[in-house]
Length: 245
Image (cartoon, rainbow, N blue to C red; front, side, top):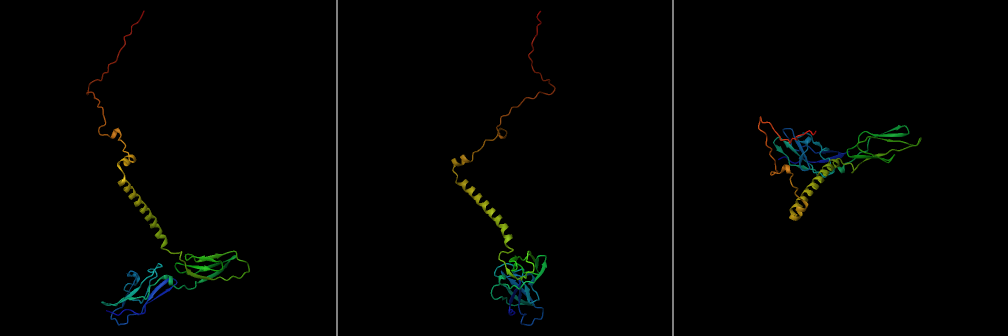
């Protein structure tokens, strides 16, 4: 059994989370491979038996939850003990650097643009007290006073209202509420039928008679058909006319 790895640390800057560790302390005749696991001890897909001593966990630690992270080394047929990150990691503790901002005069206003913004973060601009979401990279501030001097400041912050998992979670909730209501209604109908007395059930659920065409004892009249070749005769009453002179 190889010794556990040392000096694990998580660097989190601008919502990019990178785990680093020191290489295996003992010599290895083959290439040393490392495997990283996170909460629930799932393998990080991009850091499974990798020769690197760092792992980008940005996509794996993508929610505001507390994560446990661990890593181990592999040398030939030998593996090391799991080394765990001290404490739990939460992306809300990430550090945010000042945004890269460009200001351009445009007519009677200015155009403020940013090269790159962190994920799930917003920018607060004090020149116009506007908030620029992370999915926008430019803002136009119009109707400024001619000849005036303006100082534009901007800083990034984590916006708790901008959480990407919220919208997919709402749709199954509507279906879940509908299913629960349907099951509740079905149980109520079954319970009422089971508790219904005979008189009350006959009063509320009256059996309608079948129409004559659907009854098995529907009276029918069979008409005799004439034999082939016989002439059908029908007696007719004739009157004898007498001429009067």
